[in-house]
Each structure stands twice: as structure tokens, then as C-alpha cells.
Image (cartoon, rainbow, N blue to C red; front, side, top):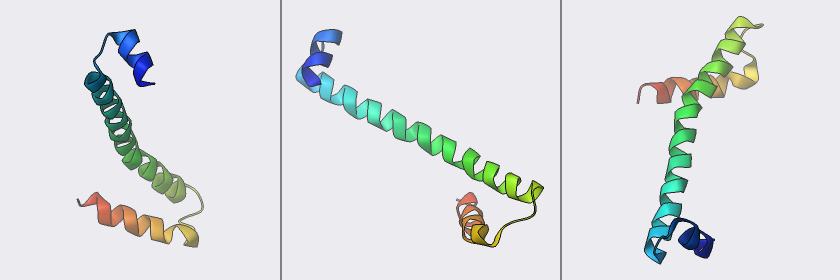
Length: 69
């Protein structure tokens, strides 16, 4: 993979390694931005549905605890 990146983008070995690190950090950052929206969707879906099911109580507590951070 490193050789492919090095030839495709004319990178040095260190540049290819840094490119992969940056790519992974960008993916993690995007996932971190999606998590609150996903949790809000679950909460709203439960509230608009038949109420909060008992198996979602732990998830709701986690949402409340981490939403203050």
C-alpha cells in the first residue's frame, strides 16, 4: 500500500505513512461527529414511538451523561 501511495502521489516513505495516519484520523473524526446525531435519532424515535423501551434505558442514561461533556 505504501508503494502504491508513494508512486501515485509522488510521496516519500514518510509522506505515505503520514498520509495513512491522516486518513485514519479523518475517518475517526467523521465517525465521532456522526455519533451524537445517531444517538439523538434513537432518542427521538423512542419518544415518538411507544415510549422508551426498557432495554434502551441504559442508552438514554449514557446519552444524558455524555451530552454534558
